[in-house]
Amino acid sequence: MKSLKVWVTALRPVSFTASVIPVLVGTAIAAQESFNWLLFVLALAGSVAIHAGTNLVNDYFDHVKGTDNDESLGQSGVIQRGILSPRAVLVGGLVAFVIGAAIGLTITAMTGWPVLALGIASVLAGYFYTASPFSLAYRGLGEVVVFVFMGPVIVMGAYYVQVEAFAWEPLIASIPIGLLVAAILHANNVRDIENDRRNNKWTLAALAGRPLADYEFIALTLGAYAVIVAMIVGGAAPWTVLITLVTLPIALRLVRFEMQQTSSRALNMVLAQTAGLHMLFGVLLAFGFAIAVWTDINW
Image 1 (spheres, rainbow, N blue to C red):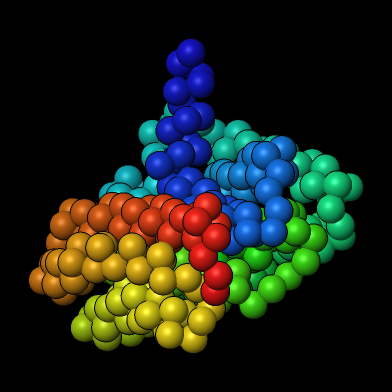
Image 2 (tube, one colour):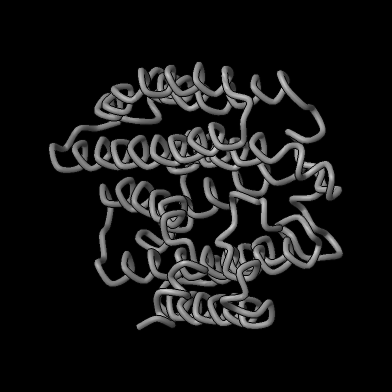
């Protein structure tokens, strides 16, 4: 039981909403044409497995590079506290990737090769996010990678496994989800500016510094709502997704709060609140599409 609790801590399951939400959105859009419970569960499990592997592998390489230390707020701390060895964390991450790959192969056998291509790209992005020689997060590419792979890739993948085709609607709907998950990462990077600079981790926040990093946070967060409005005006989504706008006051309070904070502890609260906003916004977006399907609203 103690070992299980340790691994739960290492996996950081609270972060899994970032990989669950896009599956919900992609599946909800696909439901207007087709819905298979088994494929939905497999897509959800595969997405979470790859996310878990990414968390563990990134913790390992951030520890090796010295970015995560006793003063860091963002990591699980299992390596720094000596609860798990670095090797155990790395092996755990690779096992999670293998599980994700096995699930991906199962879905591929049931649907088609595009799932395999998306899965391979996702595993590589997750591994080389911090691993050499690419170390994408250390080269100012973190937000781009997260936007692409936890926005369009997962949403489109979840849509594809249901209908075995790609379409513009899920691609466009993935943009606000990608923006908000990138905002989560950016909030993390704003909090860690000084620590990252000391360890040569050049995120966009570390490169730009504040207040430019604050403006990026505003653009990522509020940009999601601009896309929602554009989707409806352009006929790419049903009017029912306007339900996401109930979270706009939360977003406005969040960006004001973020701009006022300077301490790492306070900025850690911004990170948690941004993750909560992403989850609530994403659930409502999926629900908005689901309502349209249930009530036969065309778009």
